[in-house]
Length: 398
Ligand SMILES: Cc1cc2nc3c(=O)[nH]c(=O)nc-3n(C[C@H](O)[C@H](O)[C@H](O)COP(=O)(O)OP(=O)(O)OC[C@H]3O[C@@H](n4cnc5c(N)ncnc54)[C@H](O)[C@@H]3O)c2cc1C
Image (cartoon, rainbow, N blue to C red; front, side):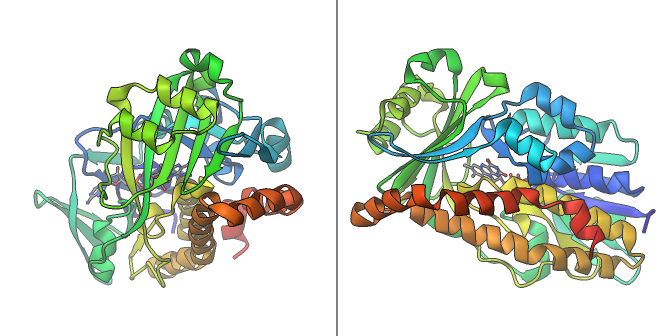
């Protein structure tokens, strides 16, 4: 199918990438976004080569490199003394091996680059303030109906509307996501404010009892982003605009390494946000006729492999290839789902397992710390395989 119209519900990272990838295959695309304006939260995101490869192919490499920080390595350390347990090179090494860079980006920057590209693409029409409320389909087409009763017709519809997807609910009925028992604090601090904290130019993960603390640079090193995850019950709000008290954050990480303390101290008390982490079990299927799902709408993924958005970006490329190479829409969408289900389910499960690994206590933590350095070779191989995935080739080889 090289002509026709796709409706994409949701203009997040996944929806916008899908719109660009589908338009590149000659489809007209209608994007519906519930928010009145484009935007993303003020936090960081890691984009590994398996996903940056797609963004490079879409012509966004130089715009992203201008805004990114390219980390030297991934490191894992112990929470208090800071013993380094894992060091996996990223930077030039990974870019050379995989032909695509590992990027640390401000979410707002990534979103802006995608939105600007979508707005500049003649085949993409975007409707802001258009909250999809229901979906109708028959043998000839599909229609999204927004909360105001406006109807948007097309040949296929992609629900890229996040973990609480209305499109998913329209296909498979209501099902609340699961609270994981973990809360994520996040903050962005100016690098100048944390010179004395000796923040290394890496994707760092400090692992402690019942918590872990991730930080990395953004915007060519001008900012440091942190995500501090702690096991907590009794609070389950999912909103980056929920302010948490800095004293609570301090208490959550009391006694941690000076680098962690330095970042927390530098955080603006009015900009310490917390987010209850939810996920779902992998879905047995996510396509029905002319309607399919993409990104968090079908495989919400905990951030413990930094792969949720990367999976959404991969989805977008595979979807576009399948739609372009198969004339019948239902067969194309079923083909896309078939190519994506097992990979995304594996990442969902791996991310969950990392929560357990990162938060071990007592003798189990001791054992982890003793064995992780010995497993470096295995870890490097696994990471390499994850980054080597080429979404375009995966779809073409099907
Ligand atoms: C703390 C944290 C750190 C993370 N770090 C990373 C990382 O480093 N790397 C990584 O790859 N992933 C990371 N992730 C995961 C990543 O953020 C998500 O997987 C990704 O944002 C999903 O993108 P999406 O486009 O599928 O959904 P979303 O980002 O949720 O976008 C959905 C869009 O749909 C819109 N929408 C919703 N309902 C409707 C409707 N009814 N009608 C119209 N529009 C609608 C929303 O307004 C939104 O714009 C992290 C997640 C968290 C919580």
